[in-house]
Length: 544
View 1 (tube, one colour):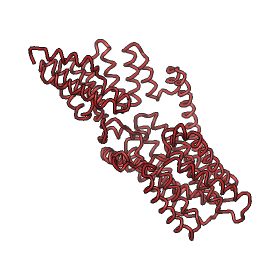
View 2 (view 1 turned 45 degrees about the vertical axis):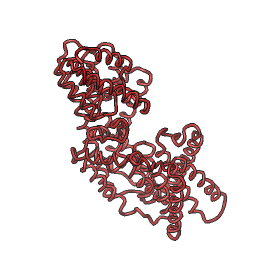
View 3 (view 1 turned 180 degrees about the vertical axis):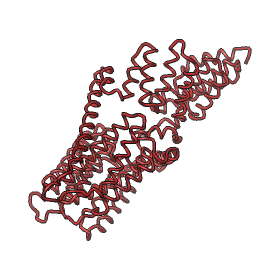
View 4 (view 1 turned 90 degrees about the vertical axis):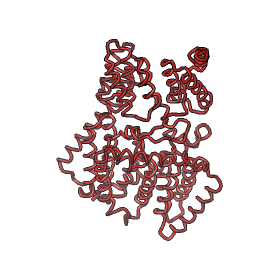
């Protein structure tokens, strides 16, 4: 019977229940529920395939993966001249293309190895293998290439594995010796090549604060902001990430050690009996290779981030861990009702979310917010186009009700309230402090607060905040400009002129070297000509 026993899936079921409970006690609620919806879709797809009785359905999945891999290869080759290795279905991240192409290569290799006679089918499979292999190498995904070859070693007959691994190691050594930059490794700047080590360090540091229950699904970036580490670049804290680039770290940070334990226990219970199945069908061998491809890839990336790759993994696991049978099992009525309820709830949530995206794309933000009131981002967009300060502040406060962990909304609310007459200064200061507490390494928040104190004539407080920004981003111009203006207001013209000259020097030297991101534009947003006129005025002052 094509059925997974309840004991084998009980651990992953507990993990899903934990994720659902954690979502309802977490902000942002919408993001947590959206991430849970993806996990539920993977679980449902896994269940549907694992209880399938017809082998033709399992073969169809294998052929579907091969066709998708071939299509992705064609897309990548077609766009290679214009976009390089970034032209896959997720432009900008070729790793997910490598997953799809690698899975197609593994299933096609398993099908080729299952055919004994050199007939038309075997020649067609043989023709597909070099095509998919070329597409895989065009992605230049280190973890994708390594994971695919590890998966191939489990597909090949046992007597051929040692020779295959030896050939692979020799080819890898030759590739590294011939062209190190193919693997995107810069020997003279190792910190850029191994940036994942910095992300893993930050993830482990953030885990120490909420180690038991985690930060909630979809909240890795919020955890990362709290413990961001400086990069070896002109701007130290410009970059952030939503992914730990390691699935186990991602699960640990978002669901805690408790959630990670449920996940590992469930995975162990499911894989222990049949990780290496006796069934010699090509579908199961291909699924085994895909399992190890994802195992390697997940050590360096977030493998189930995209629904397509998540469904690919869950479908392959269903093929691998289910036993073929003649008839589908009769499910208990309670399980049918429970599954039907969750399916209906997930479909409703996904449908409303899709409709809200539809209206957002067409600029109808009010209707989008009515359809999906949990979405804090829609309220922020409405506040950006709102001309009345009071209404904009109301929309931002409503957004913070659903997502109180977004420091940018807290900062925007503080700056918006500056335009609202009669607003308490203590309220504005609390909002600035919330932003700084949620993202203590983000220099613009300290600068906004510093200029707020400068406006209030609190020069001592302003200098402390500007010095904090200098400490975070010592190569940027605006923190020194702020210090210069604070000392100028204090009539310390000598220090004022020195800091203003430093600001101009840093802008002239570093601004041409940084990317034109909003973060960089803000930190170098000084008017050099007007600043030079101010320095000239200060130097002519008798107080200097």
